[in-house]
Length: 88
Ligand SMILES: [Zn+2]
Image (cartoon, rainbow, N blue to C red; front, top):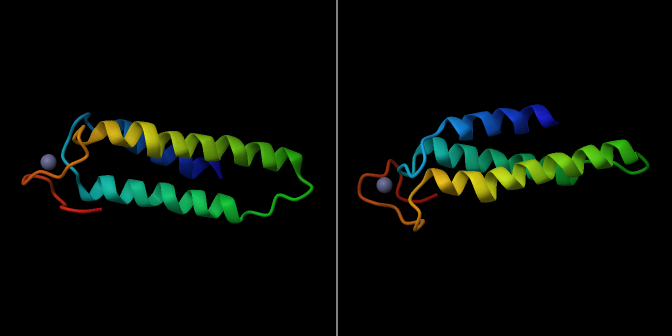
């Protein structure tokens, strides 16, 4: 389950800082949401090792979605006329 998180993290780190909103940005943001949903739905009852791993990956993905991704687009969070997309 950490493979997808690592992949998303690498792609996010490859984006330039303070760029325009792009389809790539939106896709990465959606992938974070999907991974988090999948992790939420996972049955880890009775498996403390899995539960630990899940918590670690959830934190990793949340950090990407909430801290790293927002640094890749306009600081004010607003779309400009030159952004590839005009809404998420
Ligand atoms: Zn822009």
